[in-house]
Length: 382
Image (cartoon, rainbow, N blue to C red; front, side):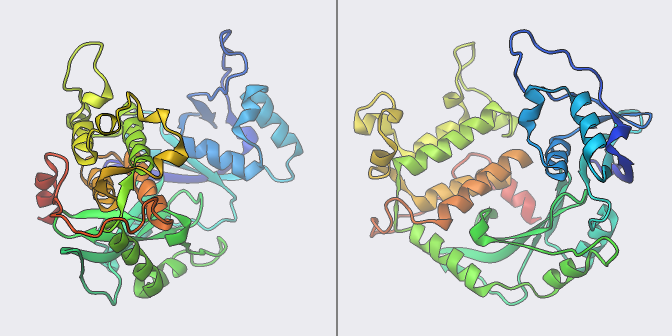
């Protein structure tokens, strides 16, 4: 979102959203088809993924329905049968000359926090930082009563992150997080175990009341203690091949979707034969985990069953995986990729590690894994 971006809210009936005809592909007759443009009144709009997700939840259907019925038929039947097909919509306008992006739709009675009042609230409560992406503003905050602590010689700070939708699709969610001070890596535990929601009430009430209470006095001592314990345990646990492979697949998927900065996502070896394994980020990942195919004498680690992978160690600790993922998410990933990495971190720390407590010595930890992270961290501190 650019600084000049604006948001427009309104209400309409589903029948007022016109859908252009979509030609069916003869090669994939039953594939899910999503139209790239819609007409809202007399305006052409670009539907986002949040629009389709919110529409399905609002009227209780799944995307598979578009395998068998056209958009026009689905919209028309819902308008005919639904007792109330009114929706509130939110448009993101970045360029007056270009079609706006249609974000989520919601019930007109649902509470909504608008971008301007949310930013005023975050400024008043001195959010450490905040950023917008795809209908959601993510803000970072420090608990009122907290002090820095160390884990194996590394300094950490407790933080919490609030993701607030400004298109009324969902409630604000609070996630516990830890900031590694030496490299400004923010590890967000994006998992239900370290997540809580803020109730905004109905649309006629003050929608910011619940959010203000969270900003004034949020503190989850038990949750922060549990998160700290999981990080401390990660320093004493070898990372299994299964845990390493999961992170490797996540990063590889990000490279395919171009969700990593171009400098780290470009292949080192040119030509059509270049693979994602030849990128700087995957080279750094391989140096951290070790050459597992050579160590175990296998051409492909996928030849091992998942159960077997959970029992075999790699050359790094779980703590290294957490720091690598948080470093990549904080300094090098685009917002979509950052969420995938933070979800990996949250899932990893919320359960028991495969090789919990198997390492009894602390090595010298690396401040950074990926080249260029130190420069990015220095800019963030200024």
